[in-house]
Image (tube, rainbow, N blue to C red; front, side, top):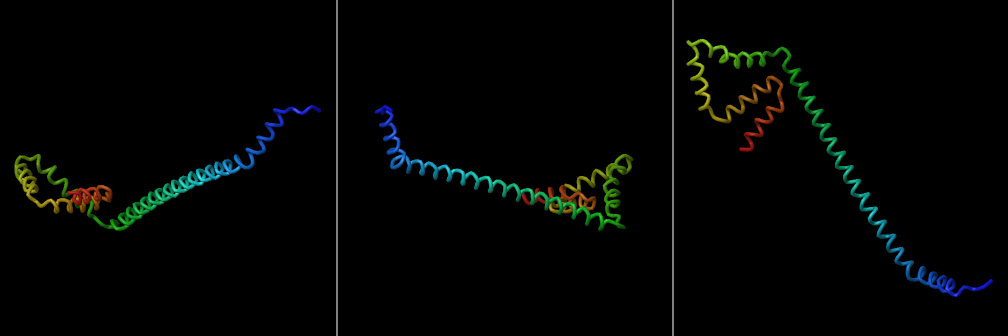
Length: 147
């Protein structure tokens, strides 16, 4: 068997470089990759936790809304407040057509322009709540707070 000098030199260089020189560099590269994988896993865990928290918030809001609507339905049994507001809101509609009461209705609407704004917001909330319209009532309250 004939010894190939180039093959022997390559084998010698390979064993010297892979052990004392490339070995630590390989370990360093391995640690770097493991660190990046751990960071990526951490980011995924944070994103999953945030998604779960958002989902729980949505579920609790839906449960709260359903509970509020159930409470409103129970509270309005035997109540005629929605019928009352339907009549109150319908009066101007019916009274504006006859000429004898038209001026009176228009003067009433003009008088409402002088009512304090806070009163109109609370009146709106009362009317809407009596019909079980929660989000719109919240809209009125947020509009008032935003001014």
